[in-house]
Image 1 (cartoon, rainbow, N blue to C red):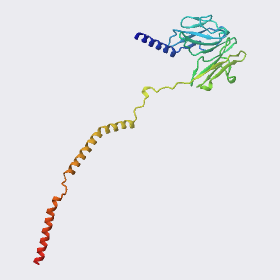
Image 2 (image 1 turned 90 degrees about the vertical axis):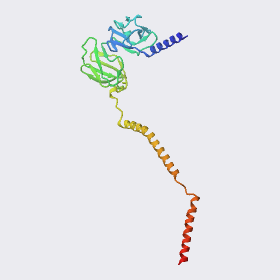
Image 3 (image 1 turned 30 degrees about the vertical axis):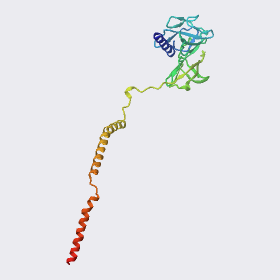
Image 4 (image 1 turned 90 degrees about the horizontal axis):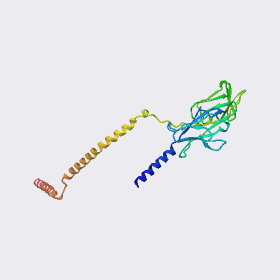
Length: 274
């Protein structure tokens, strides 16, 4: 019974590990647009390991995995030696347990111009460079760049850099080269940069006021018993002194009255003498 419980616990831990670990799909060369006939390599990486993951895609053809009538999967990487127009679609990594990575869009064009842009979302605040390439001509020809159908600017060398990107830079980008045509559109998305935690060495020491408060509390803790005991001793002493005083009683009145009577007799004798 105990062994069964242990096995169930291990299975639960394994299931949780599979659901939380997620692979990332990498593309080489790193771009989202390709010319027809280009080659590309796709791999799934999870903590520098690709074991247990495969590459799948959803194109104009039914969804399938690498090695199933497209690509060659050698256990760690999916190689496509010659892309066709039907290779355009969504690609992602999937594990044996059914976990899936984020997907990317790859576009294959039969034209003569492509836009080289980031495959994965870019981090907020980073610089992003877009390049416009032709299939045969040099890659430094003047190119016009567009976002969401509107002209941004024309660059003489065919390269445009977006500095310190924000969410406002998200959208569909394309480029065109005079005499060669224009590229398909590719989407650029921006991810919010996670907050950075302060290094351990930069932790501020306790403030002076806080340390003074701690010292004051310590002194009070030490002084209070002494003060209370002193107060009790003084109170007891005062009570003892007040209790030792002799009170005035009726027994003391006769001597006083006798003394007063003698004084009266003395006065009578004096008057009689005179």
